[in-house]
Length: 162
Image (cartoon, rainbow, N blue to C red; front, side, top):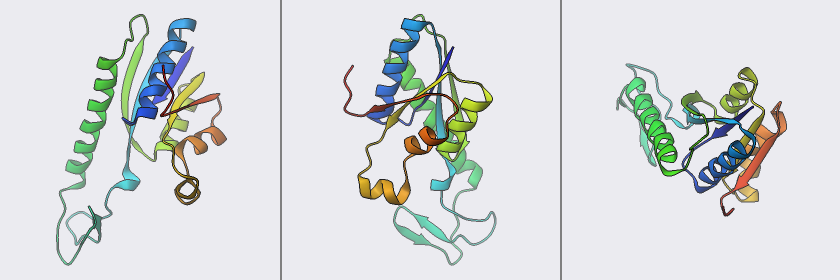
């Protein structure tokens, strides 16, 4: 039996990992921790051409150049891997088989695809706690996963205590 746990470094996702460990130890599950680099959050630009986008609140254009996409992506992937390593180092996975992987794409799509393709039995994930207004406009990764997952989804809130 396998548990998939998306991790973004938030307190809700760390609480989800804690709950997944608890379940895994009790029922003999393995855990796969994933962190998804959200490419939709990256500035839009074309290689070797003018950039039109927004980075850190400032408008870029008129011949300004950004670092190559590969360099930006590598930095985001390295940061995601550090988050997974920190979670693994900080929590007690003793007796639980754990795997880590960094993915690139839209978070909810990557979570759903991984769960489906690798036949996970359970997804345990955090709820970032968006306000109702923000959730209406941007949606919630957890809501999208719940509505489309082919396996059960357990959502853990950031204020849950373990």
